[in-house]
Image (cartoon, rainbow, N blue to C red; front, side, top):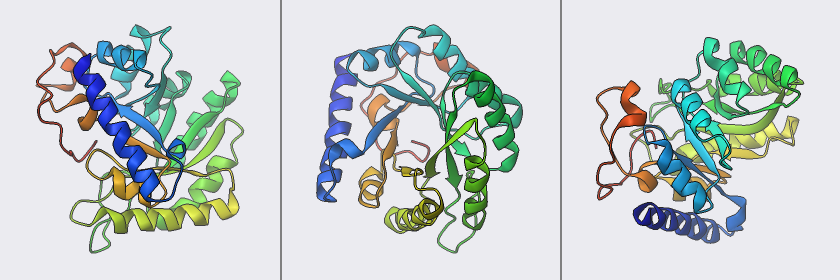
Length: 252
């Protein structure tokens, strides 16, 4: 608990400092703790420290933790690539979806949102490509396809378009990639003024993301630490490793 608390304080201080350096109110940047592979007990401990938002990238793990922590005041987010046949399970939990990247997901999520009488909040994920402009194959719609996809989301009564999400590509300075994301966000907001959210920035590049206008940073490693798991199915049952190493990692 004390180790998690220290890591949480450090990350929050980084976010606040980055916001102030960019001339922004620190309250304008939300911290999403990416709890994937870490036990529900860690989520409960961080929730007791005031952390509310938690992200998962596997549907099975998300559903299991949500069930185990029912009654704990947390808000779930889904940050992984989402399969169409599992999208409804995420939507029924009321989770915020950060990875809508194709129209096939729009109808599924929208239908569940309408049935629940509670629109599903979604971010359209953008593939920012790499240094040569190629798509990065890390999930996300091609930038040219994003405006139409945002239109499709906005046209669904069961969905609420929160904004755009992206991961900085490897092999490129993140500031340049986040700058492209900010420009695309402005283009989307011209048609959908409510879509003000930008979900960008992780353990190793959150400062660059906040400088570019990120409203949500997704941080896992710097809060929870590093761990190698023998298989995804073991994620919720492994003992904690040391948090001595918690530097940047590509997915957090």
